[in-house]
Length: 455
Ligand code: HEM
Image (cartoon, rainbow, N blue to C red; front, top):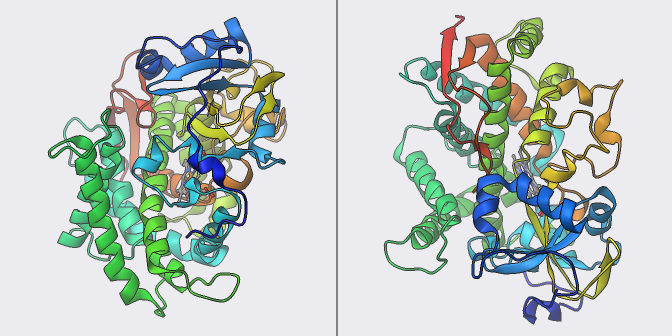
């Protein structure tokens, strides 16, 4: 959708790497600080912040840029009053290699119509039908967990959420059928492809497999878009097929396909990561687990309805505290368009900026005992997340703020409701969890659980 009504010549510019006037450290040649970041992102940021301040130069993989922390800096970048921060170019060497022409990878007037495409798909009416569609899918999956010997939560919930995506986003009814299986398989390939170090389509290589996965999804969605136009399905794809732009026209087939492929990616691993941490912390903390179970019992039904969501107070606190400690998107990226000042530093045009929400989420000026799991910090009498408008930002901010944040919270609440009513659970994991940050955060061991059936 090439509709740019702004000067987009910056798309042709190379990244600026002339950053020697800004304090910092690039790390090793060629890979910079990629390895220490994979091992412990928080530690690397902490080290930079303490030695160089809120803005420091760094190299991550092939990209040189600025590592930024601090509430005020994030406010400037996300609210972007001067239209100076390009998401398209920020992700040019990463997400754009797999998901070009998608909503997150579009700037300003190119971005607006794509946001519009999702309008009906995430309104209350749609959300009401989504929760009813996902309830039986969750039930069937959660029931099956009890058959697994040496149950590990991460792979199980990943599969569960693929079933939810196939049903709710795509409208597939037969979740055991070949269509759903092939879609799930293509999705796993494409998200794995994004982790390839060599982003070249070498036959048999990870990146090529990822691209093949995307090609499969595109062909699959193309067929469905043609079938769904004008029908009254309540899955996300059908909403997109029937949505109209400001001039009253239906969106083009290729635009819908681009956004659907990205939607699967944006929704899946992020929600998987959030649920992994919610289950990890409530497996460790019997009191919070029981609080969630008591709350679930109050509903008096095995399924949550849309109208029950607001009263899931304890689950909501655990959801936010898990995302505070382990934001599913640990690093966002932008690129400056013009020269500007960030945190008092002169930042040249076309400079990559790395924005890790994870650090603001633990800054002592915003949070008490920031490393502790303490969901009550989000409760009305404490509201630590309001200490700064960018102290807590797991869903980003500004024009690209997550479109699926309410959907994600709904999945988390609906899943946890059924899970705590079905099982009492403890983790067999000893000591503090080692975290994986890449491609998205999760405890390294995938959260091994002992399940005791309550039904
Ligand atoms: C806990 C779960 C989730 C988290 C933590 C999360 C986080 C984020 C973040 C941080 C961004 C902004 C990225 C940036 O500014 O660079 C984003 C954007 C986005 N998310 Fe989510 N997300 C989650 C779930 C979902 C779900 C379930 C969906 C879809 C149903 C979704 C769809 C999107 C889309 C389409 C965008 C791009 C929005 C735009 O560019 O305008 N996300 N998400």
